[in-house]
Image (tube, rainbow, N blue to C red; front, top):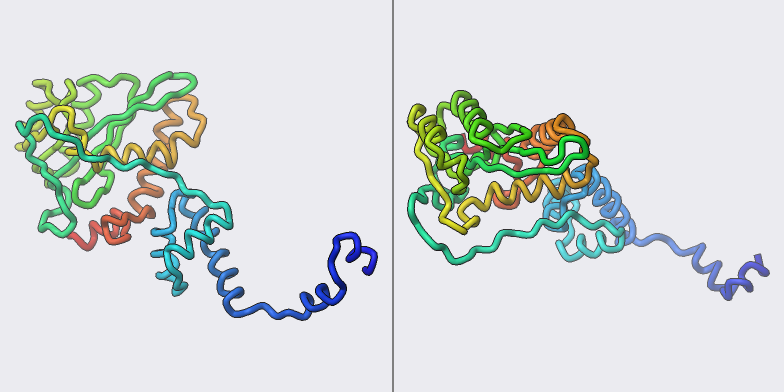
Length: 268
């Protein structure tokens, strides 16, 4: 032992003092907190930062400041997925923009105002695969999604018809001004179901920020972390994310740290 201590340059008295030292209550609390931070971080797909972990820890009775949790994460080398927030830009037009910004404290029923939008993802075999999503503007819940190899009117119209048949409460669909959403066939479907069409102002994605944010989240938190071979892989990944995590487990600060499903129950 003496030789080993001499090799590392540690005094014998220092070594024995360290062995006798008891772990403080503060140190014990830190170790418990760090253990739970690690478990919660990986249970939630490595996407939660200090704020959401602070909320989850508080629910378990573990009290610590956001700054402390942030320091813990840095020490544990836990870095969450970062999704850049949409920033408001100057609007060019106000024509046909009926959705407005729905706040969670407004008396709006869930399932009445819906946000449809499309995005795309690269696969090894099928090249670009397109994903269409219908998001409840009030609860942020994914109501319906579909995947396809072509982003045309038939793709949009078919899934629009499905979601309107499934949810008779829908009164308004708000989308961007893509050709599929301004086509006569799409407008005719909405008229048939007595649903109002609303459109974002030209060059102004902030009007549809909620579903733009959703698509950024699913890409960063799921799709970009997988090697997707074909359209079937995309379907399985989106289904798993939407119904196995996003609607059921992913908490939203804007919803009072509730999941879309939990917030929907309160709203109704």
